Length: 113
Image (cartoon, rainbow, N blue to C red; front, top):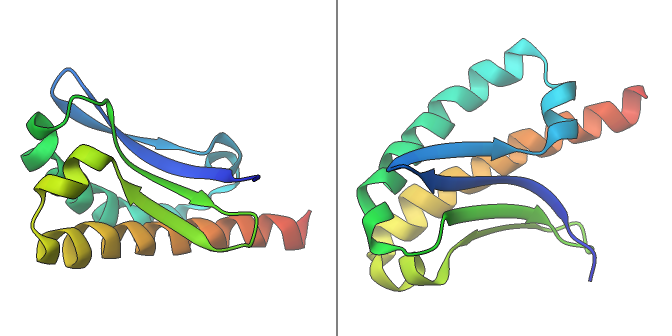
């Protein structure tokens, strides 16, 4: 199964780091940064609250499946520890919004190049 990495949130030295697909980062226009920054900041702040519950460094990942569907996944430890409402409404929903914006950037690159 072939998947394309979009982004991930990692914890390093008790700080949350947003790691973006390099090709998408290279194609990003300022208007997308304006859209992404508040979502990324909010999601990072939420994940910061729970990072001590995980032994893994990667807390959340997003990929494009070979079917074209976007996958946003919490690591297994956090998925089991975080309340369903927070997980679905705050983490995965914002994660999906970030992925949707990144897909716009990726699709725009495909159209214009």
